[in-house]
Picture 1 (cartoon, rainbow, N blue to C red):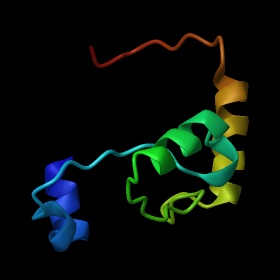
Picture 2 (cartoon, rainbow, N blue to C red):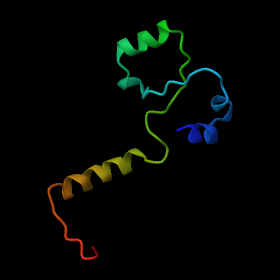
Picture 3 (cartoon, rainbow, N blue to C red):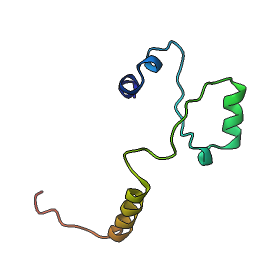
Picture 4 (cartoon, rainbow, N blue to C red):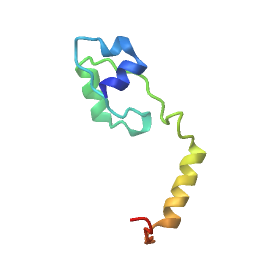
Length: 79
């Protein structure tokens, strides 16, 4: 994970204090977690609810494919 932080945000990777990574998409953060982070005076960085790699339409297509293939068994002819 440090390599990714170094690549995406070098100033953050060179900090001396700890970094806590948690999934902070607004609707997923429990109220108690948000209160605890605030009580500890931790700095939180904004994070989008969805990554730019997978747009919601892709998520829908992958879910449909997973449901379609669920329970099927496939033969591996190469191995």
